[in-house]
Image 1 (spheres, rainbow, N blue to C red):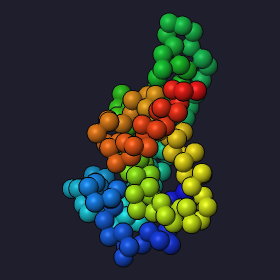
Image 2 (cartoon, rainbow, N blue to C red; image 1 turned 90 degrees about the vertical axis):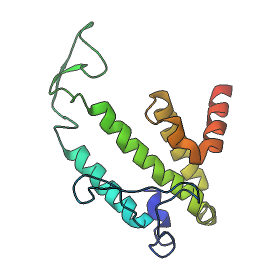
Image 3 (spheres, one colour; image 1 turned 60 degrees about the horizontal axis):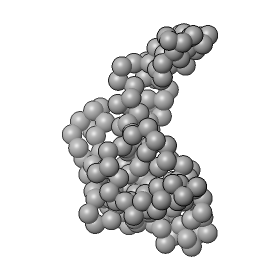
Image 4 (spheres, rainbow, N blue to C red; image 1 turned 180 degrees about the vertical axis):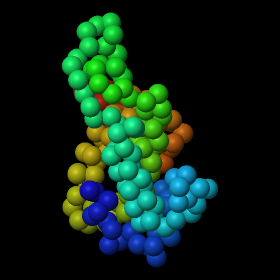
Length: 165
């Protein structure tokens, strides 16, 4: 939703590469249309990402939606809290891939479009959205620290503020 606010600025001409500043460039690979890591303009990358993620979210073999009754302890674990269709063994890795790629959109917005976000007066929305996203991925260790490098300074500030609460 927040990315939609910068689409008039994030064009193939303005953002010919999906990047987070000059040091971080992201290539797209989905194993279907793009079998090898491929340079895409930022808007095409984001569109491919959103379509890919939507496809996964709608795939019941990846994200089952048949839930039965709660299981009693000790059978109840993070991935088996309910009877019904179990989550696949690859579930955590799939989620990690999704959120890693979604992080790249935040990194792109902060690095390439923050001035436009401020001009639109929506930086508080971006900051709040990212803060929730970052605290979630941090809590569940979903993205490796090196992948978060483009926003290290912001991430450190969020953690410091969270720790002070």
